[in-house]
Length: 307
Image 1 (cartoon, helix red, strand yellow):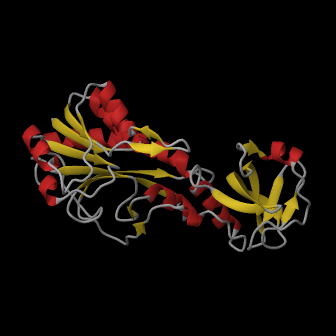
Image 2 (cartoon, rainbow, N blue to C red):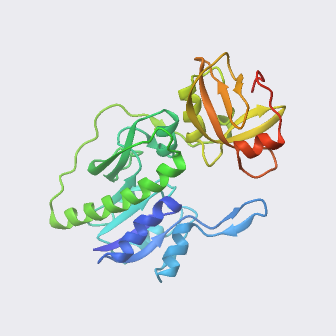
């Protein structure tokens, strides 16, 4: 099939790579404009652009899909299908209607749950035991189109959103190829979405501070859900500190944020008097380190209350 691919971040890369290796014809890639990244504000191309250029695929980076000639460019290329993976912009009807088979989206949740920008993080933050990838026929709504194919997977109790992100990107690529195969053969029957939905809003730094009155499970979910950005934080000895990794502990707690053990490990009591074990930490202005290394240079008395 003749395909136009629209995507931007790392999550979209396995899908594009799988399409490149397939027998399909990638006519062009649309991605977000290059952006300034890091403290030095270096102008950096999106990961999808890098892969496309390495493969000799034409790349377009319109600032807007509504106020540009993007629709005209796509129409001239005459694709059979447009594939959208974490592109980052809402597609207008003028683009949705161009391709013979429409626009297909790879979405990292079991729709209709977690429509929106950050379904992977919110699945972990909420302590879900399973998630998946849905291949969806796009319409004018926000992730409301008919489902073409779904792949489900369990979420590990200690799995971070970053780890899940990597797994789902590969699951999504495989599901996409299977969907295209079935579409071409005429073997797919679109299914209307049903069930409760919620909006998976963008993740930002307002979510970072740990509320130690929450249960151990909720705090553990925050730590793994916000890893590796923007990271859960706690105030330790007066300093805001990033908590990168934790696990649930069998130790008995004694209050909110109280340090229960501090010898080569850091075990902290939570609001339900259950505990978490902090495994990796990053003091302000320093690199990430394991907790044993941190405690070797930073004294935390038993009974200290983390804020």
